[in-house]
Image (cartoon, rainbow over all chains, first blue to last red; front, side):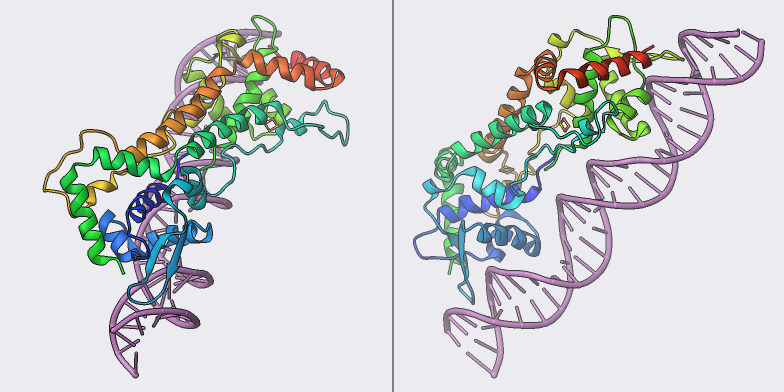
Length: 162
Length: 162
DNA sequence: CTGTTTTCGGATATAATATGTCCTTAATTC
DNA sequence: GAATTAAGGACATATTATATCCGAAAACAG
Ligand code: FES
Ligand code: FES
């Protein structure tokens, strides 16, 4: 069980978009260069963010992406689910139904206890991600990334933002 | 991100083994039949449980598997990690290092803030699984599975246990 | 001892998914 | 009109999940 690398990409891209001044857009090309990623494939992840209404786009030169909400209104889970999907990590194939001791056509009243526990763990994972806002991430990064790198990165970004 | 179906298999098999009388073994063949699973492939999952020292085996006719510890000394996480591996669900490929604004040869002092958050969620998932004991599962199942099915299943099992 | 049954591990095959590229279309800017 | 962009479909490749098959070694029954 391993998350797609697109999750890492999307989170980092959102962190960059969060630092963009009001009304400006940043292109896939710039985001791909900044993170050393294949432009065409990163594009798929950004399209997912767009379909989830986390980012807005505009076409043409000076087009690209910007956040659709303020960073404090976006949480990690929204971003992760946008690219990874909302499906639970554990899927029950109902193997208990194959028990040869069961009467013909017997129907279970509840989901299996095993599945319920696995789904509870899944919810704990989602809850943790839901509690972290994009603004929290930006706050941490702005403290931890050396000031000169942080500043020159956003100069680099602004030079390319339409 | 989706767990292997072997996780479901391993958990159900452990629940059955937990009901086995002291000193008896149950073969892969019986466990596969009981759950309607491919014997050879289920065998791989059971081998993983064996390598993790969760079950003990013996060879020959009347051989098979039994638990290596009491059900209250085995938790869900041990079983899940035995077949799914201990690797974290989020892997950081360090894309921040590709930032063209970084000085040559710059080295990060800490893991990325993004990764730390994702790993925290992963830990929450593991914590939940760690808190549930195999004996808890057996308790829930014995309450929820209709008494006649529960009883006939263990009669079926005992008839095949060596 | 001999034959049977079992786990164990390696080799191999197939299906599904993740990763990546290419190209066309439509919208936007200049 | 020319350049640039996102959107999305088609396609190719790599990796992983899901199996199947076989041979070796251990245990047991006769
Ligand atoms: S039958 Fe699917 S988890 Fe129990
Ligand atoms: S560089 Fe990998 S999560 Fe930030």
